[in-house]
Image: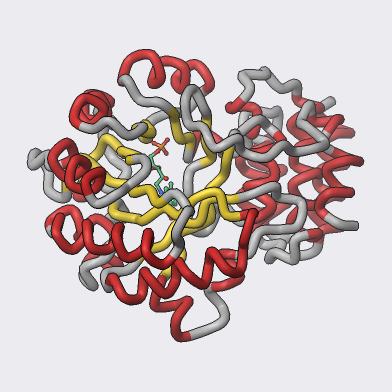
Length: 329
Ligand SMILES: Cc1cc2nc3c(=O)[nH]c(=O)nc-3n(C[C@H](O)[C@H](O)[C@H](O)COP(=O)(O)O)c2cc1C
């Protein structure tokens, strides 16, 4: 089965859309599926779009990886069922960004909604090479990277994703965002934490507001948008044009529409997601964490999560879902 056939056959039982519409190019009022390394693969993005996300991002993709090998291209290629995707690149060398932007644009054509540059990743493996949130300390280099992407992919919107700042208490986001706007960034996504906070502590939406006050391009709010209500609040409280949902999508593709799923819909969504992993050629092991997320809060949730931990094939995961249905519904 193709992913489009899976959605047509299985999305309705989960109260998800069987057909996906393309992004209209506008950010105003939109809820977006955030980039998440190790999570936002084609199947995950398809579930998010079927749940109502206006656009979904790839996992972060290394420009050096695209330059030197073939493997990273798997993170870039959308499934044919995806109307379009946002591709997020990371690196530190403008020349490699230019080349990556050019090749990604040529490869994806109309399916490329935008290119986003990761200036937010706090992981030491990334920052020690001057990539991700390390760029927050080098606005001139970061601006050159934005320009390089625009030159590499003329006509494709180039956006940046930043944090409040790199080090606790040292907020650079408003000034930094202005510099990215001057370099031609079409939008700025702001995660309201410092890089050194990793994912701890509360995200400060005030930082999003301060960036929104500082620039005239659209701002996308990120951080602690864990429910549909939180997404609407982030839109009304921060002055951001759009909102990104990351961890709030775990087991909850309905976070984009505000639909409150029944237990039956959650099981159906897990089944649909497993079939999408299969249809998109993904590693089925990803369904192990998905099981924990979709079955969370159900009676005997730990039992179902444990059962999924030893599954390998799609059939095995689907039989756990059948067991949940028999026992819980
Ligand atoms: C598992 C995981 C992977 C992530 N990977 C990326 C990534 O590849 N690129 C990126 O810009 N942000 C990444 N993020 C950050 C999210 O996009 C988002 O900005 C952050 O989680 C804050 O939103 P939340 O509090 O709603 O989760 C990741 C977050 C998580 C939890």
